[in-house]
Length: 232
Image 1 (cartoon, helix red, strand yellow):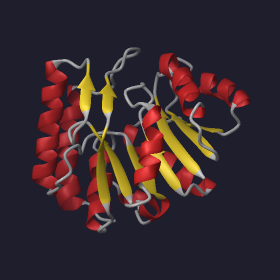
Image 2 (image 1 turned 45 degrees about the vertical axis):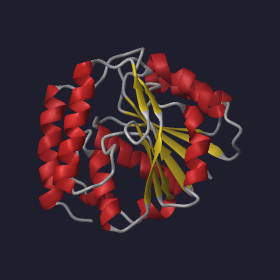
Image 3 (image 1 turned 90 degrees about the horizontal axis):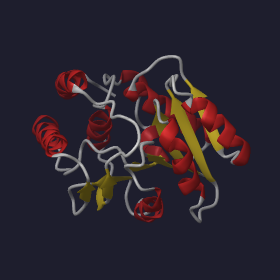
């Protein structure tokens, strides 16, 4: 079973098109796990309606909010459902679902595949400030965590079941966007094989980014905690 895990918060304008694109792929036994953080715009209700057409959609409604816990809860659901391969992606259409078959092909030869904007990848229609911010984040990620991965902060990834099952989700320290760096750090420490493949990153058209100054400050503090005070 292939699982695609998508955390959502106020993605009503994007989620329907994403669902259509995912289930248009020529893949069998594909299941979609949507983890919604009580979106005020009715994202979860829309997903519930789509599930009438695609029963492979699994909706997890949460009453709390947080990108890190949403992702970990989504992984738990996909593992519990028996998925052998799990893909993580954003709901805002910045990640092209048509890349999923490429991930599935590459995961045959490694344990984790990262969709990289920097290892031969490209970024479309994103302003210089966001690009600069991303560069700084990746620099400090590599500096603090000692990783050679070029795109540490990206959110488009594919995992073998064994990789996620080897992690103790209850011992993660991330509360927001640093979850990607923490996952990569702990997976690297366990000596799993990691590969980067180039992707074309599309900046969101509908809705607003949830990443602001407060989230960036939190990200930096969490990197220090991940490096020096986290286990599991």
